[in-house]
Image (cartoon, rainbow, N blue to C red; front, side, top):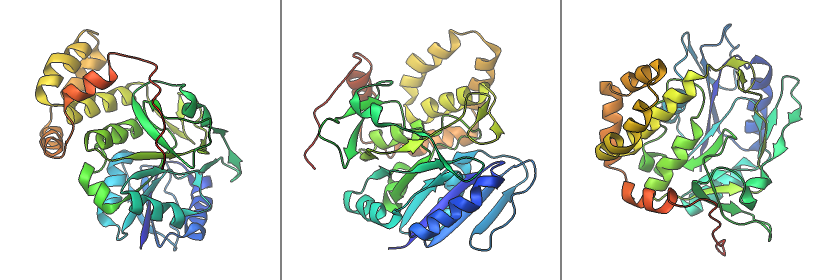
Length: 299
């Protein structure tokens, strides 16, 4: 089993070396680094395959490019400020389950030290209610919970799973990239399995992550892009678009224009061929009720 790791990075010069070292020590066979428009170029590391974008394309675009250019049987998408101890073991688990795995990982700050906090509370029914996660290595008191997405920035999937869901929504901005992947997985009936000890920390809303500014409008554009790609035409026209139109804001106008391009419409058509669950099932399952707490499975 060959493991490829893809790191999108922007202005993360102080973290990337420690991250690459962690991935190689944990069992990665190949590491691809995408310097996505950093203010000054991130120095190339001879241990990696290095790409540089003078203008930022967004982390999801980098991840999709990395998946296509990598050679691994399993593709690991990890933020450039993360660390993991056992990569090969959890990759084997992802292959066995044909699932997306969110492992126990940690985040680094600029000094290369671990920082962050446990997300165990999401296993106890706290958070925005959307998708039910199974908890890998679950403690007895932990259970399914619905969650809008994992913000840990670390996803492991067999290449066959990546191809099944069609990869990441091709967001061109940083912010709100991970929940769209979780939603695509649900519609394609791909399990998402969260480790009980995921640790991370993202800093604030003005400075997202570790040094790259994220304008407030960018996550909104990404959310619109996700809804446009993942839901069918009728759902978009009857539900999501009127919801956006109701705001009557210039940002919404710009966002709606951005999700009407030929490239986005091609994504819409492609994902429609991959879905095995319907929009009707999504609305009947998730939107009428809140505070869902399902019983955990036995495996």
